[in-house]
Image (cartoon, rainbow, N blue to C red; front, side, top):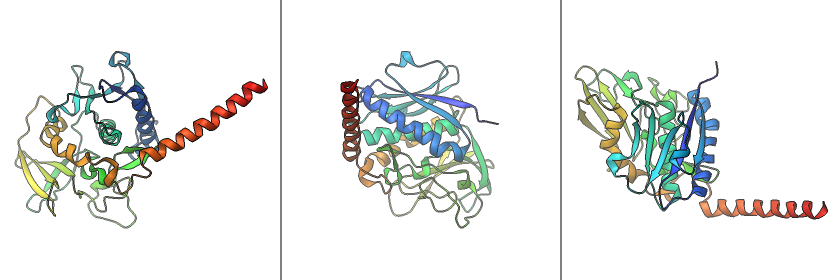
Length: 281
């Protein structure tokens, strides 16, 4: 059976991000969703750019870029109908907000409502079986592990094998291969889980220092999705993790100016050919 297709809209309400840039990033996100994410997570998706929020069809999940989003408001939320939407902080560096947009898109498509969990042995030695929150970009969310699609920087994401009980040769744990073993995080990343015996949520984070750290989040109450509650706690650290953009990316490919010059050269060639066809008509 073909997966049910989900529709995502990318909209800018920012003075820093114009419609042209939104269209370029939306095209890259569409390619990432259909080429990279779809086969691994068995999802179908479209990603389209819209000039105004009022233009977005009602069955699309909006991702809205704004200038006035505080750390606590960034991330994926549920609207009054229980449908997901994302708020993304604008940035003068396209690679920063495109990376954030990719992060939110991947997580929205894999877990639209922010409560999906997978059981496994805890990575904390004094705990037993726990349930891990499925946030596919968090463990390798830093710009160091981002990659490029159409010259646009997008987020790495883990595969379902990320939750395997043991590591095995030749297994892909994240799209770029940056994650080498199950349930492991990289600098700038984190993972969240629920200890059912104590009803406490925990994280392993790597937001500084030479080693990751454990921290207790306490009990998370209802009213909002688990993901949105965790995002409020980690959003400032996430913003720092992506703030370097392409400069620190191991897999970032060519820089934006180089990609732009390639596009300009192709456009010039097409214009020349079009002019020749018109002249010969």
